[in-house]
Length: 146
Image 1: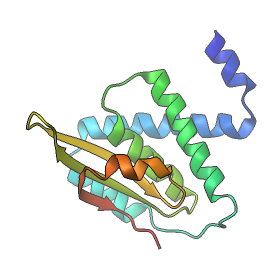
Image 2 (image 1 turned 60 degrees about the horizontal axis):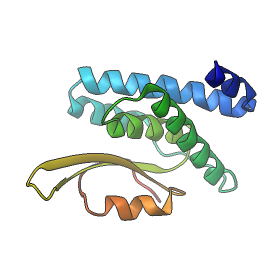
Image 3 (image 1 turned 30 degrees about the vertical axis):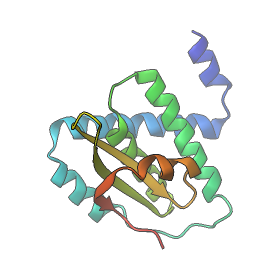
C-alpha cells in the first residue's frame, strides 16, 4: 500500500515517465526472451533515428528517464535486466530526440567466465557509468552521438 501512496504522491510528469518506463521495460524484456538479438538490433537501428532537442532540458529528461527505469526495475526485481533496461532507456531518450547510443559489450572475469553487459551512452549520462563500463569491450553499438 505504501508503494501505491508513493506513486500517487509523485508529480504528474514523473507518473507519466514511470508508466512509460514500465511499458518499455516489459516490452523489452519480452523481446529479449522471444526474439533473436539480430532482429532487435535491426529494429532499434532502423526505427529510432536521431532527432534534435534543446540542450536546456536534455539533462533533466535523461535523469528522469533513468530514475523512472530504476523505480520500475526495483519493483520488478528481475535478474540480469541490463539489456532490457538499456533498450527501454534508449527508446525513451530517442523518442524525445535525445542522442543516445546503446552499447552491448563483454569482458572476461577473473575465473575465465565471459560476462556481458549493456548500457546507454547519452549526452548527459552519469559520469561514473563510463568508468564502470570501460572494462567491457563493446561488440554492438546502436545509434550515434553528434
